[in-house]
Image (cartoon, rainbow, N blue to C red):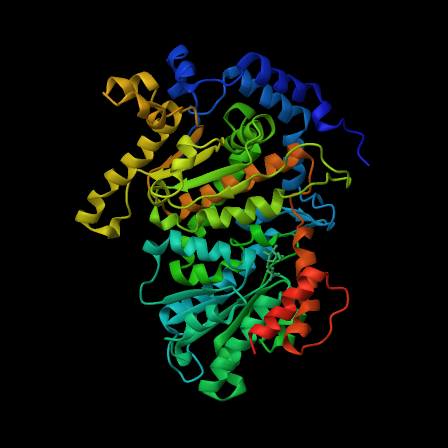
Length: 547
Ligand code: F6P
């Protein structure tokens, strides 16, 4: 049991509370900018290709200094160093947390349990590269000798969201002659829609599961195998059409996949931190090993920044602290991530698992209930679409919703001149939203436009809605790696401050156990002991309705 002071009783915490209630009340961005002409230039941090502008946040130099003192008091950097050193900071599972080793250069040394894991990491990357090259070149053929044209990744959670998100993000870098699909939902419709127009003889299934016990994935993989065998007949076809990504060689073999076709990773890689491990094989086939390695270099660049940059210019630390500021001192319950890039359409969904599965915790590392807010609800979709849906609430609703706006200076080259010309309009929207959210429109400004008095209140924008703008030149593989690592470490910083285990996910277990118990009641009509009256009635109604 740790003897560290309770977070909310630390002097650094109460200093922030005082700062919030007495000094600032609610700082007005209009006034903060008016009082500080250099704010826009000063409140920018750069890491790699990312320019992170945090000037439109409800902070002053004093706020930032107080937040950094909180980070020092809670030893965020000490905890960070323990993670990079391979200490078992995932205490409830007694595991090291070493996703940073997945993108370490070949000559680096990173030890888990006294063993340097970097050679193993690169050995798997080399095997993945060789396999990806064979599929891409047509050298790896299916059972009937035809080349593979379709790749279907079957996985869920971290074994789906990462590669699916990155595939969308890097579409412009993919081999367009290959079709990639991602199946995750145990709803049979997902697999059906994914394979209905595919030729089994040209289809490769990648079964991605860290544990290889996840019911959704194993069920879908079993159905995919039947689909394949119905067309190709012979059991030995499986060896040419199925590969596995897992830490569990025994279960993979038990499923009937040749261990030679298994790409491994390790228990020190959390599912939601795993798409730069073997779990990224589908992505690597799509973009090629070279681009995949560029992406890993992008991750590594931000790892090094997080590991070495001083607090004032440490981007993940800064983003983590801003989140703590709003969540713990302004009662903000949510955080919106709004990319102004169609290619990032799955980015926020990916971050939902990263952030909410990591920091959705209500007990501290010693198992005591926390007396403070932890992880926010993360949400959002590409910006311009959101503008015509839920931005109304961000602008004029009653909730404080801090948001990240993400955009790029250049569209991808492939678009062609006419579509590229639309990029300025896209980015004009990003900049306009940041301005409107921060500075709003006063009642006097509305009146000055001749708006009738009875409408003035309706057309007034209070502003003062905080945003952080992340700008990069172009969405390249490296930039994607940088962005993901930035958020990974932001989540780490917040978990470190809140004194929670950000690397377990016990909260997903109860539902899994109950689903197993309920299933026989649906399939076989069996009596299920221990069902609560409401659920028992629902089960009975379901049985009745489906007759
Ligand atoms: O149920 C949650 C979870 O364990 C996630 O943490 C994980 O990413 C996902 O399920 C999939 O797990 P696996 O890769 O073992 O199939």
